[in-house]
Image (cartoon, rainbow, N blue to C red):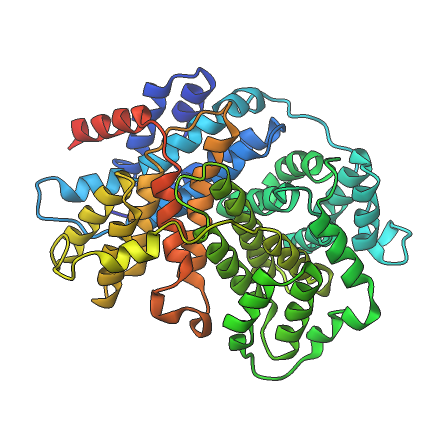
Length: 489
């Protein structure tokens, strides 16, 4: 059955606006099933009215990962049970509905037209600044001048400039800005991925309206940003030379010794290690991936049961992931100081204690096959262990699954599906982080450069399992979604 990219989601939007969760569940199942709409496109179409509402960035950030988790879930092999193919077709409703709960209030506010008015755009050519549009936006963000920020961004849009130039300007303006948690950059990246799913086009003003108020947030910078700013300001630490480097990439330069230096030294030493790794041949993308891996190692050092330490380390992982995505979206010198900021942000996470027994527990699991040897059976057992909070056994199963050569995307899909069973409470910021943190760890795991991947047995897999397993919560909404799926089979 061909996928329908432009399905009518009016019924879904009406249900979300009316806080009718049962209606939203059934509308989503109709879109996934009979209409065969891609999950990412459904999420994107919901995200545009949510963006027009403005406000907190966390709900849309949840939505930005739901389509990706849904696509991973469709890689999970099906078993022989009757109706298994239909269940796989409808299973992506789990992450979608959780994210719809997160953004429902914003959809209700942002759906009615006319939408808020944005200022007239200033063409990049008309900005009288020594550093052009990039410098003008950086100054406007630093001055917290919301109207000018919107006018500059609208100038990019109105002149038909490639959207990557606008993202470069935003990321560059935030390159040395890091309030605790790193939310401005993370939100800007998350919103951009909603627009990617929506194919940008005439939807850009919704993104501009939403992101502009988030990037002028006046939360003070953390010490990590101050160190990064001081380091990047030295002429000897400028990264402009990366534009003309012709050497073959050597991402192994951002290997274990680099990660040790970032995690255990001072913030300045973390910056020194970053510069040395880049000079040694690491690409900006590879180094950002290595920082995400370092953040995962820091996260895994948080003792089990540390309810505050795990989310705090997860924020550093989210920020490093955002930097990695930024380096993939645009290769411009304006954004490369982000690497210094990310190194300092990851360096600031200093968990106390050991690895919480996760890795040790995984090695202590008996060598007899757990959950069998068939991929579908192993993944079902893995799902049960993650849902039960048994990270050690889940990790042991995951290692065996990978050693047998099975599909990593399906593994990410199972871990993401468990995270999607955790109920989201839009008024509880902590619950709004579960899906994005798990998705960040899983995506970094899937895209880690081979020189850093250690054959798939690396800290990012452990981090994804820990986050999905230990950041638990209720599952009443997931139970309703599953019941609705069962009724369709």
